[in-house]
Structures are given as structure tokens and as C-alpha cells.
Length: 146
Image 1 (cartoon, rainbow, N blue to C red):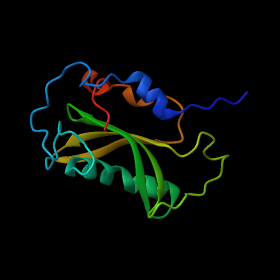
Image 2: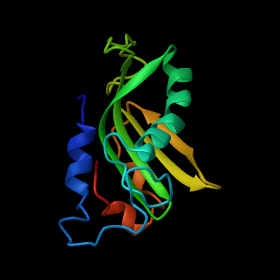
Image 3: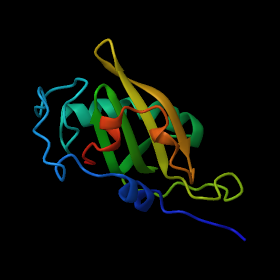
């Protein structure tokens, strides 16, 4: 019996957004800030810096130039995680062998903010587990997903 999981659905089931908990806006979370707590909303420098840290490892594994359709980027206390679908620049589909990636090619990544930069800690392509909260600060588990 083959089981498949929707990573976005798993993440959504696990996440409780900071907004729903009534959390105040994080200090330093401005549109242009790249720091340990800035919100990674669409179009921000924070989001670009996080995705720029993820991209090279995924490009090495999948080959060629890629961009992401982002399902979730969350940041809290110097840690971040990303759930995204890679595609070729301009929206082209990435061809892959189902034997290599039986659960698809959704990318899940964890990062840490170190010395003023986002650093990729781990990435997995096509995983079906919710491993990315292992060792994560509790605040990341409840961070808003952008």
C-alpha cells in the first residue's frame, strides 16, 4: 500500500499562527529588514534572503536554474522553515523520476540566522514527514506562515 501526504496540509494542521494567538508584531519586522525575526511576507528582503539561501542546494540536486512557488515561509527567534514547489524559471515543469521522488518534489527546508545571514541547515525534496520542527524553538512552531 502506497501512502502519499500533502506536505502543505500537514504543515497547516500542525501550525497555529501567531496572529490567531493574538501575538504582537515582532520587533524589527519591517518590509526591508533581514534579521532573526522579520516577517517573510511576499516582496520583502527577508523572504528573498531566505529563498536565496535555499535555492543553490535545490538547484544542485534537481539540476538547472529554478524558482519556487512558495506554500509557506515562517520565521521566529532566528530560525525559519520553508515549504515550496520548485519549478523552472518562467514556470516550466521540472521533470524527475518518480523512483527518485515518489512523494513529488516539494521542498522543505530549515534555516538559521547567523552573522547577519540566513544559512540553510537542512533541506529535503519529496519528504512525507513533518521533521522540520525537530529541535525548533516553540515560537517557530506557532509562527505565522507567509
